[in-house]
Amino acid sequence: MASRKVTKSRKDKLGNITHLCNPFESWSPRTTHDVIRDIENKLDSYYVIVDYQEVDIIVVDGAYGKYLRTDPDKTKKNNLDELPDC
Image 1: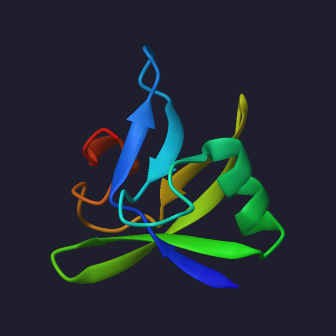
Image 2: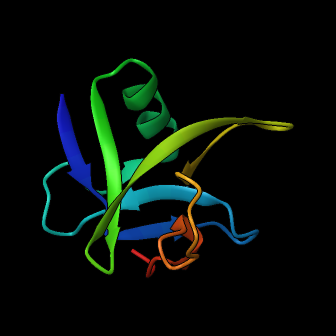
């Protein structure tokens, strides 16, 4: 299983995350659908780094289906919504 560093995210017009990206990696961009499948099937894991802290990206079962988010912590800087656009 590869551990993939995410540095950017792509959002649709409603602000929903559609892709995760790292422009220096061959896997990028990756659709959220594919990332969810990767995580659930333990094919790959994904993470972000902010202020030298690594935070895992997890799959959450929401009211409208599955979505991605960072593990909850005390900062919003590592939220996928806050990443630069890719």
